[in-house]
Image (cartoon, one colour):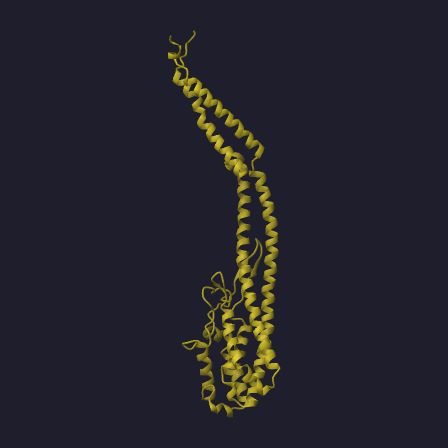
Length: 350
């Protein structure tokens, strides 16, 4: 049995239009792939291979994050090294100045310079990078030290003056200091005054830094120390040397007592300089390890980028061919639609 189908004009008109939306979507997809060089829908294109692609991208993102954190760590280390260089230069200059003078001339000659260098030491240890105190240890949110000669009087200066007064029964700079023997002044310096610069008393009166320094992960498998603490022994010895030279009124003591005190200052300066060299060397090794880690991660990132490219990249020539083919189909569809719309029985009625 035969049947007759009926096709209306509206059905003929809509037939080409039904495929236009799909073709326009395919054209937009193909154009996006040409501009990005990457499949528009990775999941649909790669199927199960998308797990590998996402894994590679995750590894690449991890390496990128480590590289960025390494840049911050290197900036912190560079700032620390610049401050340490300045601190050591001042210490070595003071030591040379004192060594070039007779023992009875040293105290008066270095008193003022020691005071300014103590202030410079504080400023250097309060250095910051990206808003973080580089010598604060893990307490990097605020500068670790308070200026010794500040107003109101700092806790450190108050402690030094109290220790001096309690020991000698007069204030620094008093005329009674002339009668103090060299051995008595030396005993004070190596006893009550030195106690103020122990690790525990330094933290209580001088420094708000943490003893714990910052450790940074610099690669997938490496962690290094990337800061120094203002509580370090070289800084405490250097501060003590400057305080002895400028903060206890050495010029009011006898020549013999001044000589004993300045000998101790020179000893402290020499020890502090050696300790500063060690700190700089430690941080320098960290800088070198970060640079090496960055080089390795750059190579790893390039390898991952190549693997991701192999998985996700489209063939530009193939994508361009698809754009041309789809564009041709669209033009044909538009042309056919126009021709169908021109079909009308009225045009054939005379």
